[in-house]
Amino acid sequence: MENKTGKYFKYAIGEIVLVVIGILIALQINTWNQEKSNQSTLKQFLVEYKEELRLNIKDFKLDIKLIASQKKNNDNLLKNKRLDTIPLDSLEKHLEPAYIKVSYSPTLLKRFENSQITNYGKYDSIFYNLQELYGYLWPEFNIDKNKHNTKVDEIKSYWLYQQSNYEFNFSHGDNTFINDSTQRKKVLINLLMSPKARNLLKVDSRSKEFIKKKMDQLKGFAETNLKEINKLLE
Image (cartoon, rainbow, N blue to C red; front, top):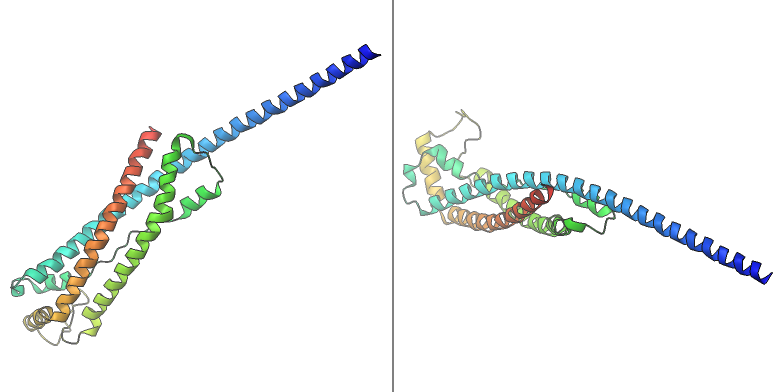
């Protein structure tokens, strides 16, 4: 009886060991499958992130070019002592302050965070940068962007509505002016030589110089991320 009990006990221990080993193997297989699924999901995120960055960079380039052109116009008006040499339509165009339009969607970051993936493997630095870009840098830039665009609203309001000396051309082929183009140009030049108008130009130039630096930095960060993604996906 003692021998039989010992054999049964050893048999039971063996069965338990086999069951435990089976469970461990099943858990390991499940872990491998989950990791494989996670890597597939992460790669899909990378593809979407790549496209988002490409669009961001394209929009940044357009806005940076526009802002730089507007600042150059402002500086030319401030430095030029012979505004009468500039055509009237060019003078008016110089006084159309440029807005920053570049924007982003936080959807990708939210989906990524909701995926509950915590181990990014070889993509670790990429997704850290994604969180840095869309979770911190973009929201911070949006604050500066909104401040700039608010100033643009104030400046545009002055030129189009608040000043009471010059009648602007609101549409192509407008022929409803009280004064002829020569008289209008003289009035506009006098207005541009006033301290109020020159201060507005200076404020707009400083604002655009500041926001352009911000956009250059953000575009550079996005371009670096895009290169790293392309390298990983090759």
